[in-house]
Length: 467
Image 1 (cartoon, one colour):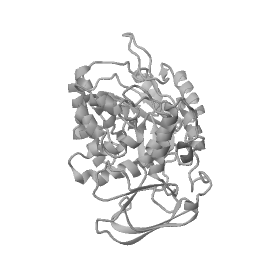
Image 2 (spheres, one colour):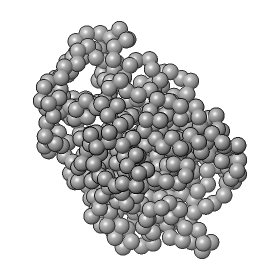
Image 3 (cartoon, rainbow, N blue to C red):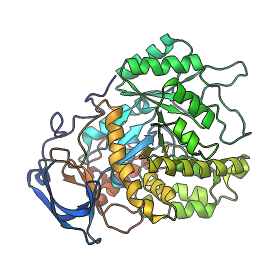
C-alpha cells in the first residue's frame, strides 16, 4: 500500500521519468532573475533556472528590498473529497472540472480523504485527454469507521454518498486495506467521532472501541501505512493519540487547548478545515462576500450564488446548530494557530462539503486563518506549500523527499505579488516546467459546463474542444 506511481499519480519529472513529452516551454531554459524564495531564505534574492521541467539552478543573487515577486511551491490541499457534492443543490462537480478548479488557483497537489475510487475513471480519462496538466493526487480509497451500535447509531461516514468499511475485528481492517490498495490507495483514513462539537451537543454517530482503535493503529504501523484519523473533541483526540495516531484530519473543536494539553499531544499534526465548517453559520452577505473574489465565477457553479443570495437566516439557526458551530469554529481557529506556531498545522478545507469549493476555498482558508494578523502570512503560506508538499509525499510513502524548491526537483511553483491577500490568485503558476494559461483553464471549465448543459458527454478537455 505505500506510495507508488500509478494511473492516478504519474511518476514526477526528476523522480522516475517525465510525466509527458517535454513541451516547447519545457525544452527552452526559463530563467527567473532576482526573485524572492521565502521558503529558502526570507532576506535573499535568487536567480532560478528551469530546464526540461526541473529546477537546474537556484543561486543567491542579492538582498530583498520587499517588492520582488515571491516564488513558492504550488499549494497542497490536504483535506479534499472529490466525490462529494460541494454545490448547494447537492450536485457534485465533474471530476474533470475539479482538476481544473485546482489548477486555476495554483493548487498542484491534492490529498483526497475518502471516496476517490468512485470518480477515478472520470479523473483519469480527463487527465489522459487534457492538454492541461492535472494536479498530482494521493488518496485513501474508502474510509474505515465503526459498526452500528445498540442505540442504532452508525459510524461517521455512512451519511455521505460514498462507501465506508465498518470495523469490528482485525479481519475487517485487513480486507479494507487490501481492497483500498488494489484501488491505488496509499494511506488509511479512520473515522473516529461521535459527532459532538461543543460540550453538551448531540451524539450523532457510533465510535470505534478502544480495542479496534488500537489494533488499527498497530496494524497500519506494522505495514508501513500512514494513518489519518478524523476526531472532533479533545477526548477523542487524546484517546486516538494514546492509541498511536499522530495525524488528525481536523483541529479540536470543543475547546481551546492550553499548554498542558498541547504537551500531552506532542508531535501531533492537525488539518485546519475551517472552510468545511463555516458555511453552516454564514449569512447571505457572508456568502456573497466570500464568493466575491476573483476566480469564483470563472471556476465554480454560479448557481450557488443564487442559492445563498436568498438565504433568510444561517443554516445553523435553521438546524439549531448556530451557537455550537460558531463556538467550534472559534476553537478550531485558535487551535490551528497554536499548531502553526509549532510547525504542526496542515492547511486544508474539507472541500466537497457543501460550500467548500475545490481550489477556491483553499485560498480562502488562508485568509480565515490569518484574520487580522499580517504577521501570520508567511508562516501560513509556508505550511500550505512546503508543509503540505511534505505531507503529500509522506502519504504516498516518500518521507524525506527533497525540498520542493531544490535543484533536480520538479519545477512546480507559483509566483505571488508581495503584500497581496493570501486569498489572491498567484500571478503565475508553473507545473513541471509548463506555464499555466489561466484563461485557457477557465475556457476549458466553461466548455465542460456547456457540454453538460447541452446533454453531450466527452472526456476531451483540450482547450480547442472547450471553445
